[in-house]
Length: 88
Image (cartoon, rainbow, N blue to C red; front, side, top):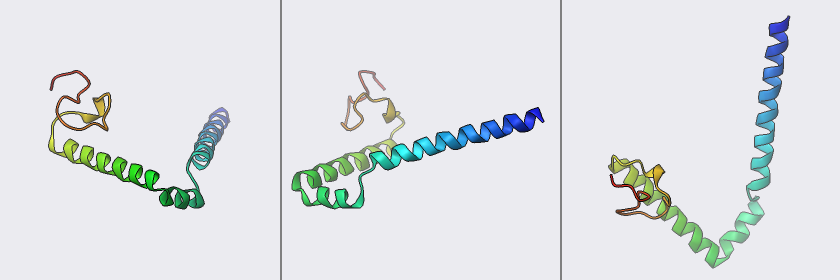
């Protein structure tokens, strides 16, 4: 009986955590209307395109190197010497 109670409490806690996480995701993520407004603004569109380019370049570099690019202080800056002051 005690193990059943512990299991139910654990499931309830996991469900509550998942619910809070989902609620935060819904609050933070822009809606479809906001996305369309952002795409109409040229500066936002350019910024989104630049971020996407940097992300893809970082993923390509990570796929071709043995260096752990996640340890960089600023992973959005590609190229040599971006290892956060550490040498490879």
